[in-house]
Image (cartoon, rainbow, N blue to C red; front, side, top):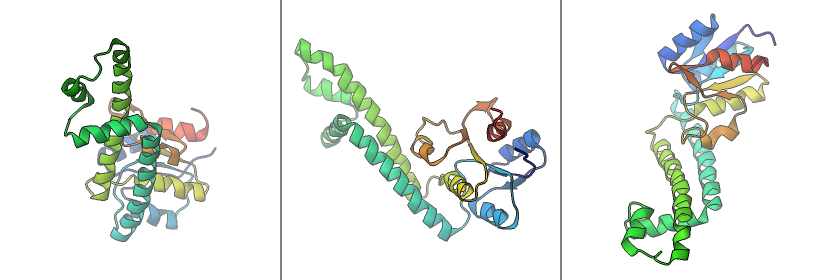
Length: 212
């Protein structure tokens, strides 16, 4: 693949400077609106985009926020469906105003029977797995209340797919972490590793060129 014109999207200046150092002559955008503007004027061979960055325009922000909340809400429902025990225990703990499942066992000491004691660790493990859902719900609330940036990069990726432009998400958000996991199925190519706290722009480019 012959790549000459590269567009990098990132709202942090240090990341832009790192990308310029790694990739040389590149075009840059710091918001989704700026990305759309550049795409309407230029043709790019590939696009490397951050995951979370400003949209830059109120009406567009509302549209993308609605789509984001739908994606995240559906993901949360799926996680709840796969762990009904965890969901039920969360309801019990909330109703009793308990902070953890361990506090539940300490308060009621239900599992005195040696046979039942063997299930305690499994129950706690299932509940702790479900704790992740709380983190997703918190992210949902932060995005809904505009405390947290939108994952604008997933919409960049979709736009690139529609126009058949190679794209990679280059992010510091770990793919199994709260901020990326719900959106990993919205993108194909991504690089979420850091070297000396710097994004791997070259690795992302190589992956699009088929040499990674």
